Length: 171
Image (cartoon, rainbow, N blue to C red; front, top):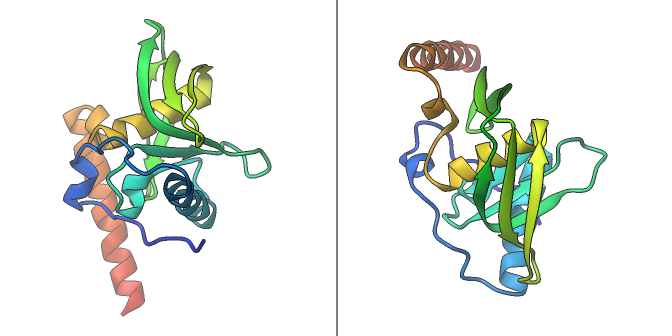
């Protein structure tokens, strides 16, 4: 399947919660394939169906280009550790800006696979941060919403400056 166009900030769809996956069988597999192909095309670690304009709860994660991808259908956080860790975060929907985001260091996620079987997975470190980031997106929480007001304003100014520079370079 070809890569799909990305939903770009400040599109309001990035702040809308995704609904549960209604497709089964080949329908959910096709959606996951579209997300995976787009993830590879934009060199991201994680991507949701929302990023390609589909408001369904599908996440694909591949932390390294040479590792296998993981698909999470209807994922939810069921536990988070009290310990916290900060990781640099950004979004393909807001390219060019990255900022550390503090989140629980370990999490447990419940999800279904492409065959509909339920699973639980515990994650820590970068994988935990990535899962939380993508599940937030499914819940309508864009990554900058996790920043303080001051840090969010700085990120928005940097992003606006980048867009202005890109517009000038393109004209």
